[in-house]
Image (cartoon, rainbow, N blue to C red):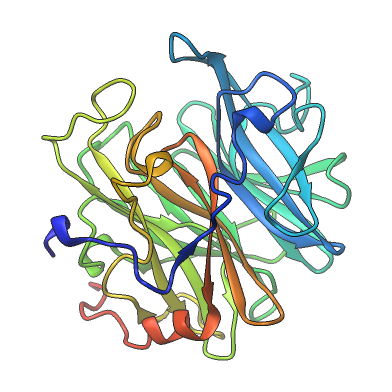
Length: 332
């Protein structure tokens, strides 16, 4: 596919309020506000976002935490006055890149954490104040998302394991694992490989937690292409572009991809400043997917690893875009 011609699909409507959350909205030190998990819980939208803070003038990151925000309409957000995990003794201290799923009336949050490599974890809460960590993976894994209901009696998650510090040139794929209780995970298998996505040459993995539809589990994922001639971002050495893709997974066997959009769904556009320029230029990372009663779909995404944005589409049109299975089957 000719990357010059990549464009966001016409069904996507970027919200005119974009970015819907940025550092200026946060009442404590903040610099980069992005990669949020978003869901609806007890009648309101809730967001947990990644906040990297530091010296703005020097463009220097000195730390990170998680922020909590609530909304009535999914567009205007009220941010809690303190970070969710600001206490160094908090069980989620050092966690980042959160994703939220309501499962059996409780909120499950998957997250990344750097601890002798990059690990991914699963925590659960009922009130966003008390958290119980159920599981932290071995290195290297990240971008976990939990399905919003059990399948075959099991809790199911998508994830993107990778050998980041062992084989940095490898391509990374999207996997699935199951658990009886959220603590012990296994039955792992590949769901979608990099070579199956025509516009990807580096990695593919989960974005927002899947949403159940009559046709299958609608899944917005992230896909990455790399070009070593690029010199993007604050540090001038960023050479990856992140786009959002779209897939449909079987309802009973969610490791089977039954539909795949052949082109990217959302592409960071040069003329959209908050997507093209930031800490890391040309990054779209979807982290929240909410389907409204009228069929409108809200897609929340981090832009340029700097701000949080919102796009909308119609559910039926998204389903039509992924009616065909992957052209390339999984190998062995």
